[in-house]
Length: 42
Image 1 (cartoon, helix red, strand yellow):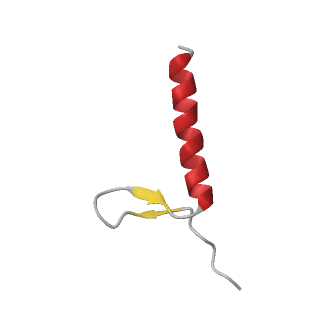
Image 2: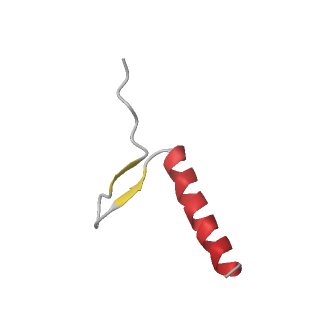
């Protein structure tokens, strides 16, 4: 049985978390894109 892959993991340098898998990068991209779209239409 394989352990679950974490989408985000702790950074090596600094505070916070960073994407570890393509799913994490996809979520990060969607959040950035939605912020840009929300800013353009408000």
